[in-house]
Image (cartoon, rainbow, N blue to C red):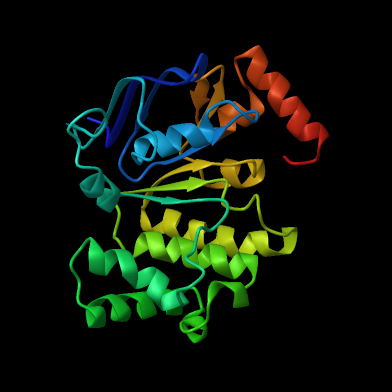
Length: 247
């Protein structure tokens, strides 16, 4: 049994089908990279897994338990499935440490001392403990994104979803964020990444899924997808990426 099972998932906005029967498995400790053209459903799929978007059909399971549809405890789901967005989404009126401590205190019932101790441990790990009392607007984009990742990790999620986490960053700040992800890969964190960073996907992925037309058009190990894709549409996409110098 896969850790995350996505079966024939559909997501419709009006008459537009964003996900059109998406089926995908994510094994424990796997790093699954979602690639594909804009509008192919990468971000929508992650939001559906986390319960931020209700699905229009199909089923999503975590550890064999259904986590989509009516009657699901969304708060319990989000304890287990963390998500980090491209736009950071830190609360601007809260300090860094307050941003990190909020969910563990409210959702996990941790005391302030417990939550702050864990937050400082995580901030030291990314060398931002000296910024604990700062507000987000005093941080660089790369620092804000690293704090956003730490905020998700503070909940000790089973699965971490990363939605284009470097696309809003200046190029020189990308590496400091990707280094954190590399560390998480080494530690065995189960992750799903929607990304345009093809070189990074090739480096860290256990499995790469090319999304097109609202489905998984092709999937396989990175060495196969990036060097010998079987589907013509995958080849066309990667040819454009190579032409742009991004692989």
